[in-house]
Length: 372
Image 1 (tube, rainbow, N blue to C red):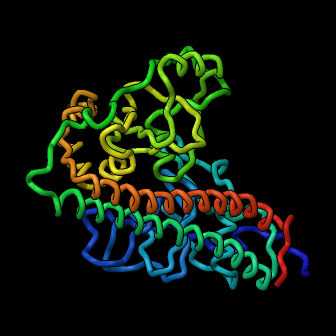
Image 2: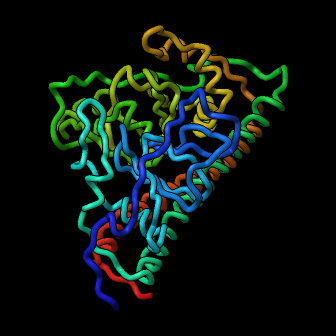
Image 3: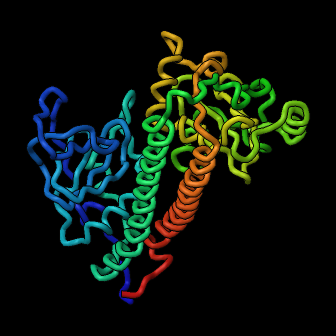
């Protein structure tokens, strides 16, 4: 294996500030406009050929994005103007491995100056080893992306089936009942800020439930003690497998179906608790809440002018049509299979993300070497 070369970031790539383009100046087209957080719109002209990379210059600094199609590099970014013969995918992961926070020169708005980061000292492997490193990391990201796309397809399939069985094929003689006749809709026991501790049982707000919904994992910032958790749950219970928590203040209507391995408590008012599914299987209610049909109904009962909210009383009164038992049984079986596959994919994604994130700094520093 060849030795790595000590050099500077500016000797590996040349970064260039992006180009001004106001929202009002964007013309109809299919060219992505790359901002500091990713695509912020589309235009009919490109500034940069693929493969291309941007990092955040203003606002969200240093966050790299890889573009596999021509794009417009917005002035909130720095883009790679010249790769100087280095592998583009390797450069992308190199930039991902660098913490640019220490190079912030902005006061009110975080800002990155390319002239300050070009002199940064780095270690550079040979072109052959660059390609080998890029291949390993990109194969992990490709698998993660594939699993995300599979889950999107499965989510759409679940909604399509729900719409078919419960809307399109609904009969006039199906009984329509309030939602609270099918399950219990409640909230949690109040936990005060003074009760939070630095470690213990995770305490979730809407923020953490949204993370669980989107990624299948969360980094809890708040905890309550084991003793307090046991005291509350002995009296009032805790979320059990297949219970549903629904975000009910601010960002509304994001559901999370509790897993068997979950152990946490949650914020009252901020989240609504669906449990005791005596009249309709939990998986059907969960699919309904995730569907556009459910979202439209939730929108219709939303209150609040300064801050949107869903109330327990409003949720209880939502009408739900009850199909025959054979339809309910078929829907439960098929939807359970779909969501089990989604959950399995989420677990794979978490494992692959952890593997990639552990490998990234080791591969980029040369601590772990690869054959090429």
